Length: 242
Ligand code: GLP
Picture 1 (cartoon, rainbow, N blue to C red):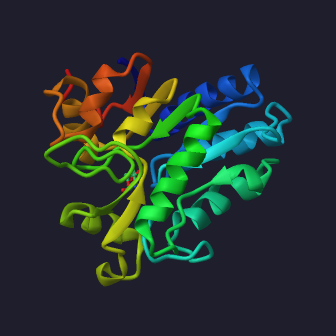
Picture 2 (cartoon, rainbow, N blue to C red):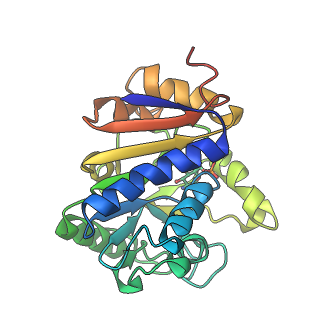
């Protein structure tokens, strides 16, 4: 694991966007694994700026998002599908037919997850997988558990994740209780993993991801075994790693 120290959120966002931009420049047909949450918004803004400056061409890039809430349609403003359009896809020249997010509106979990695994595998897995990290060490929506998950599956969200994510909903009752998420096996198949984290709320999770025992109670700790994982985190998020 390479740990890159960033001064603050803006610095983290610029550094992360630069790595993703390098990937797109080196391989214009690359496959990107993308994440949602507050953390990557600044990274996406920097990618949009680079596109607007004429430095990036997304026309042949394809993307696979990590996860989606169950029960939300694509045009629900709280869905991750909507988030990606708002924060990235609508502002760059990506072919939206090449963007993929698990279909949260399909109640058939088995079919939805199997289909998502099939298309990610067919694409050859991400060249670069961007990840945020939950306060409890979750990645995607792989919550702390007794074993590491494999492929895409339906998860029951923990109370701590529901509470953390409720800030983006009108009230906590509106937060879906389940989500479809790529599994750990799929994430570990990415050629490169880029984790971004900021703020002191993430300090324990970042410490456990980088230096704790590798165990499913901190799903992100498996990334210690990934051959090409870069963590870009700010001062506050790295405060327990000194
Ligand atoms: C959600 C997403 C994760 C994300 C996490 C942290 O649970 N499923 O992919 O990493 O939130 O979000 P934030 O970046 O808002 O702290």
